[in-house]
Amino acid sequence: MTDHILVHRIAIYAHHGLTAEEAKLGQRFYISLDCTLDLSVAGKADDWDLSVCYAKLTAATTRVATARRFMTIEAVAEAVAGTLLEEFPRIDTITVQVDKPSAPVPAIIDGVSVRISRGRG
Image 1: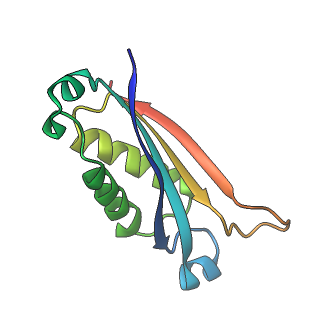
Image 2 (image 1 turned 90 degrees about the vertical axis):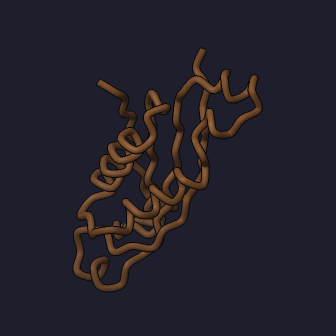
């Protein structure tokens, strides 16, 4: 059985990116989480202490993604995944997606994203 906690599109404002303009102006990013873990005990007991708190996931993600400047959204995703696996031992695996809607590319696009999956061990 694989259960999931999904947190969709946490909005952050940060100065990530390669260009001087991105460093100076900053921009909005969205981070989504897909945490796999066993939720059966929490569900049967109806006890949120046996799960992972969505608010704490969101706060930790925001803290990591805004604590320093990253050159790539790949690095943002790695930092978020590593921190959440470290801080929330109930999570078995995590998928982190970072969306950059205002990526400076010479085309008309809705944005770019990276998605990584990491687990324990």
